[in-house]
Image (cartoon, rainbow, N blue to C red):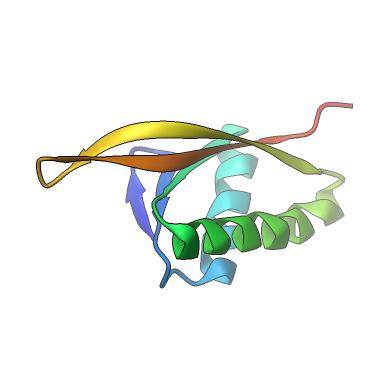
Length: 93
């Protein structure tokens, strides 16, 4: 996982979901939301696992999480790629 800015995480297929989940939970507690980017099936899989784990991390505080996926066009090495962006926030009741 690579951190960009204060609450943007780039997740790779080799990222540890529990570590990413800790970063999500910390960002939610501090900033109230976070965003992740993933390119490829493996990275998206690790991202979704991390969000599921993060829900368990924030649940004792009475919080539940939701996420909104979106496509994002980014440039890597002069080549345009399509990423999935996840916006993660606490569920409003």
